Length: 142
Image 1 (cartoon, rainbow, N blue to C red):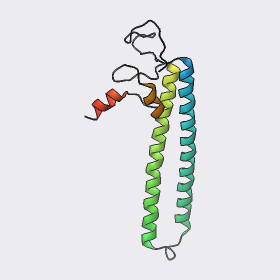
Image 2: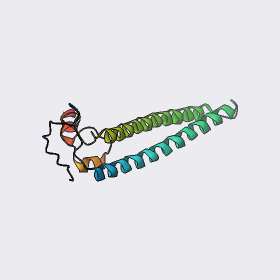
Image 3: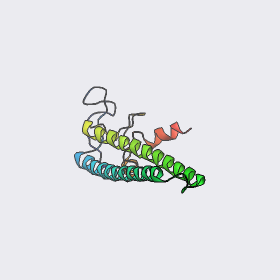
Image 4: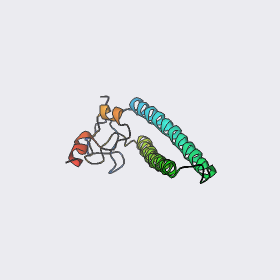
């Protein structure tokens, strides 16, 4: 793990009570690129789902009552509902990615919001938008 040594204790910070990232600029640039890549993929997925919803809506409006079976209409409605749920989930994920990018800009990225300790590089590689360490996550799940 590439940890920046500043001569400060873990509890000390540059801006009062805000903890400072334990990572150097190169590692922060790596995580920024990772987050931006994931954000770009998520935005493309949102656009795809929005197009599917639009197509589904247009198709349901163009079908006459006599050419469409009620069971098919129910299935289509359920598929649209599933798409809306997936869309909402993806938009929430984009929000998490945006907040992680803000933490990089604020130089608070990689600091657990529960314990105030550094989050391991391995955890951030796996879940780059996380705000909590494994230790805090395990305590949450108990």
